[in-house]
Length: 274
Length: 294
Image 1 (cartoon, rainbow over the protein chains, first blue to last red):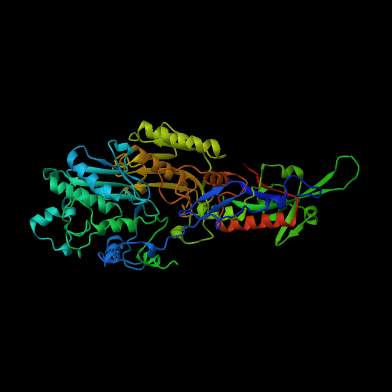
Image 2 (cartoon, rainbow over the protein chains, first blue to last red):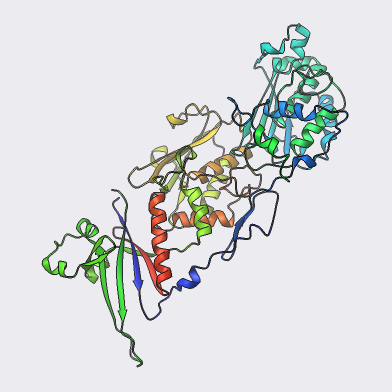
């Protein structure tokens, strides 16, 4: 439809309705007054502000440097796959920014579910990470699904040749898929496990523990680690307790929530804020 | 036709008087000559040329009061620069995130008529329509409602596995929207949302995603990292997404006719600068947009 827009100035000398000097008064930007860890907006007639997120200096993060001398190396490998800002493929940090609510497929044995819950209860005190469980799928943002789909993805570089190792390897019988938002926040996840794993309680427990862990930050497998060390090991050895390395990875990962993309280069710079 | 933004200067001259008699106003209305030629059928005469005025590089033609009253006048809506800076980042969605002053804002001129495919549950439909009603009630010039038949709609919401209503979304396997706009007026006229209901496995996830995409498609907005995740203009997900006061202020501004609609960023900035300069120069002034064929 044809239309023209005209801006009309009605200039009078005897004072008509709009008072320009009043109108031109800017709203107050109090960005520097209130500091909150995440962006925040208030807007009304008088105020309008938002905060740029101010990140914590990661050098204030505490972990056991004696028992975990290579911790940061492992973390960067798991999260960024050792990539940097200008790498040919850049891996960025992914986080859950909302509480995780897990729904287990009905066919998974209750005693297995109980063990998984007990295992992850160790991370209940991580400030920005929350995991709970539901029996109602509509309340969940994390679905664990038993499926007839086959996966069997074993990269050659992992050097897995033995049949037993193949069966232990997570991606032989499982897969997980996450939905992320535009700020690299994880919105939802589906962890799929092939039905045949139900026939072996050890295998399905291993798959569940490892799959859930990967999806807490799209952590990558780390083939330089020994099996017993971490859930990110290529061949994780089952344990009732989460290792210090794994819980430290989660603690650092959720030390703060990021409202923007963080790559390997950004991450290193976060150790030099102050 | 390409949207034109033209200035009319109406000089409203009053004669100061100390009596109790009502002031007499003498008003003279001028329009740029180019605009005069495209709008009025009356040819310019020698007499007209005697009344020409010159404003910067524009020749202004004196028009009669009758000519002036064609169309609708809408008050210019003043916003401070802080707000306008945020507005520009959201309303002008630059291709490849690269600042381009030719980027235009987009808006829906006609009502949005939503058609839901059969896979969309009653609960989901109800929730989306309630969200749409809330927006329609609070934002002038923006109306969203359900169309029972696909042929009566201009916006389709469907899931993977349904009939592929929008071929451009064929290869999208998560969730996204697709909108069309008229290149001349930058008016949005058709849209679709497609959701993969396997990945968005619950009603609550699907509802949240559809609301987010629908809101974004109301102006083909660019979302920002700078806002609290609860805001619909924020890039990040939140379980507590709501149309915040800021969201409403921005959306209402986008849909109010007190700004030029469908313009490029360059025009938008030039107009605001011009009006604000005028406001600074004249303590008392009324600024209006005129829509001749509105």
